[in-house]
Amino acid sequence: MEIKYDVEIDARGLQCPMPIVNARKAFQELPSGQTLRVLATDPGSVNDFKGWANMVADAELLAQETAELDGKTVYVHYIRKK
Amino acid sequence: MGMNGQTTVMEPKAAVDTSALWAQVEQLQAQVDALRRQTPDNRLSMVVFSGDLDRVLAAFVIASGAAASGMEVSMFFTFWGLTALRQKRESRGKTLFQKLMGWMTPVGTRGLGVSKMNFGGIGAKMLRAMMRQQGVPQIEEMAQMARDLGVRIVACQMSMDVMGIHKEELVDGIEVGGVATFLGDATRSKATLFI
Image (cartoon, rainbow over all chains, first blue to last red; front, side, top):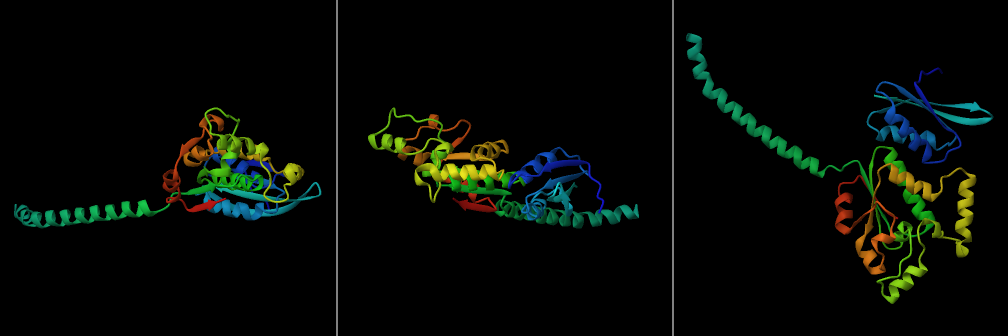
């Protein structure tokens, strides 16, 4: 799956609530219509970003996928700013 | 001209209709305002009663997470929770009991113990080390983050008076308030927690 994104943040190795805290900062600066990609190793981030996108009015969770990077499972989240 | 005559006949009726419509609009506006007052803000209110490291940490994690999700967050620190907000120990102008209380309670988050298996502070040190190993921010960073995210922090005036804690002993940049301050925020919150 190839999804286009404009900004990426790396939250690998970070625990709750850091992935969403960092995502928020990047998302606030993101221009409308652009997509943010978040890399996380926290398995809880899968549900966290679903909940987060539900709470943030202008956020749309486009997709979530897992990938193997440097021998670790990485959870990738794509969030578009409406 | 014939048309003109017709409009003059129509006008009074149209005028009546408009005023009825206006009345309806005003009524609806009043209803919308009333509903808006009842609708909660996108807010989370918390009472932090506990002075345990693990509980206060949980409070700050929830606060940061909520603030990062675009919620307004209010944290009301009362009783043992106040110890987490202390930055120094002062004895001047306090009663004997208040001085004793001041000496026996921690100053700030660094002095907090865990709610279980504290063993005189060893448990707290162990938990901090375990959190570091897992890449979990320390409670001090978490508290700073919550404040950077705009979390409203209020210290309970009444418990400050009872325990003899002065505002100068607490960290800077926080508010002081009473139960009505909490209720004012809590009643327009989507979620409230007592920790």
